[in-house]
Length: 342
Image (cartoon, rainbow, N blue to C red):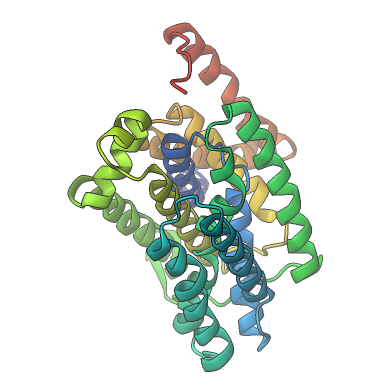
């Protein structure tokens, strides 16, 4: 290995780490607010990339029908809940079951956008509402369950979504056009415009999330829910709606990640699972609680993967996932067990 190869590997590691960082932030967000270790986070990546690929091929994306079916089921459940006397927040319910799917249907079915940017926006409009709809359908009825029970449900959800992905998109992979065809030379190192787009979008999205959590009332409500659910509920914060927002952000981040990686690599129906696991490794580095540590862990995972592919390509996945062992060992030595508050 010489300096040029090391710089090329470092560039690949940083680009991959940026994607893993986005997924790690989403996993930390969902876990801190809802106690759900959201294993299907990677499926949003695959769905986002392959939805855009279907529109590029002039096909109506199958994920649109999944969204409409989820919205119809959740709407019927909320109507039944209302008839049985249980409280339903109708503004939030109608937004996620009627307005958001209606916008996605208008964009994908009626307008049928032909430009890459409009297709990307349509993809985000289709994938983002799936997060809160899944939360309302699957996780909110289990809000008081143990973390282990929620983890088992997440594994089951992963299996269901992978099966749906195979049914919707088939076994063959797809790639999409790059958002930037530019190419630059940094010394002797070629830098693609798409790599800069990945890093730039990641930085912008992370800064937007920090501003959201630090300056907006909704963001502060999410932080309060993450710190103490019972206390947040006593202060009048609707923790159920906090779950909606956290899952919506997770779906949005996953879809954006899919749009960013689709021009760089061929995406298959099950590609998101491996990417999501690497984001999970980064989130574990942050203790499923710290966003900055999760981002740092993501860069570490990306660099470890890149350099492992050079020195021991057959074992690069093993080396990446082995990183969990010393992190868990260190955390088990330095932290105390705390019983769940509910």
